[in-house]
Amino acid sequence: MSASHPAHDLPRGDALLSTRTKEAVRALLAPVVRLAIRLHITPNAVTVFGFLLVSVAGVLVAMGQLLPGAAVLVAGSLLDAVDGALARATGGTTAFGSFLDSTLDRAAEAILYGAIAAYYLRTAPDPLGPVLLALVALAGSFMVSYTRAKAEGIGFSASVGLAPRTERLVIIVAGIALAGIGFEIGLIGAMALVATLSVATTIQRIWHVRRLSLAGEAAGGINDASRES
Image (cartoon, rainbow, N blue to C red; front, side, top):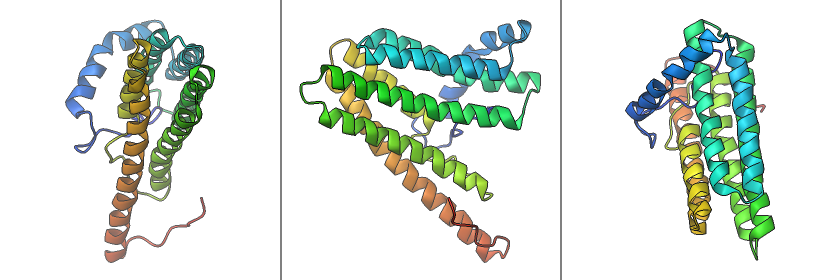
């Protein structure tokens, strides 16, 4: 995405989804972007509406309406790509847009995994395992985002890794849909995969920033940054 709505963990060669796949999805969304321009809809409005759709999806998932929840979640997630494309097309890039986008992304993830936990609390005979797995997947997802934000705060780029946000969304949507058609193990497996890949991605980003930092120090161009979080 643009500076107003920066691309979420921009695709690199080590990500699960290829750059070509993501560009193909953006191309499919181009008519939506053109319609938004004609209707004078702002990127921030798209961001907020996408967040509201994800919130609705969370309610549906918590109520056990998994297939409708997955469908609404797909719609809300696609809008998350539209806002950035719209910002680029209209030149509406702002610092607040970037802040709003990132903040609502984290809130949406919290709502989604909270909804999955609520679903298992309502339906599972023994919900402890699935609920803990949802919490681990959420914590891992937050760490992936935090490592990138912290790296950018000290002057590095850290958009590397197997499972940036788009990949995690695809996995969890697939898991919800599988559970919705009766394959409950699909959602458990999806959360386990998100948790595992999030940890791996966090480690990849730590290692990446370490390499950049050492290279900068060797060149004499970067001082030790503050360790305060």
